[in-house]
Image 1: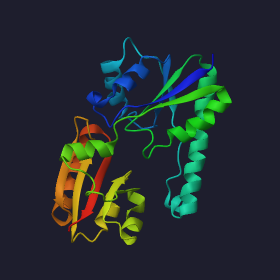
Image 2 (image 1 turned 90 degrees about the horizontal axis):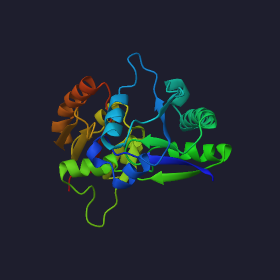
Image 3 (image 1 turned 180 degrees about the vertical axis):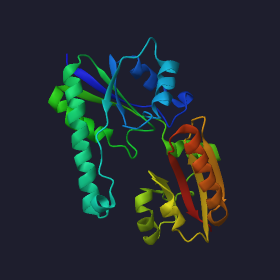
Length: 255
């Protein structure tokens, strides 16, 4: 029988937001391939992942740890669109090679845990699609609660007007979205608040959240001109408390 590689969306951080389908999938694989980033004090997200598995797994998990490949994040290497794409492509290839090597060394079905939803601004599907052909496996994907869904729920809002579009982008591309005339923008994958600080605040509303679902969660909302300083303080506090910060926000022009 062909082995399976199961990509499991585990939500933005709250163990209570893991779906029944995801729990079933976690208990149906033989081991988990866990990517950890090289940090002086270890990967700060490891504890959150361990708590989630302890909550939902029957028995002790078998973890196969893979050190994450380094990605070029230098200004010189990623300043242009072509340079950025090349850096990400090289990073994906390095990750695929490491995953293929690990899967070749271990028998059985393998589980990969992905924060949020695997289909929304995450490239593990792309990486594993390259791997399964090499190791003779099939790929299955289990969706998860996205950070965007969690943000809207926390603020008790609908992220778009009736019959209106929602533009989803990254912090890196926020200036382009505004230049294009987008007026309802969800921003993911922000390494800092630099792009948000560069927005002319007049006329913009913001709904912001960091570390959604985690004990270090922070929220802020209001006119951008009044709320940016609150966000800066809250973002720093979340990072100090958890050792990491993942934030998302919705920008909307006032009518």
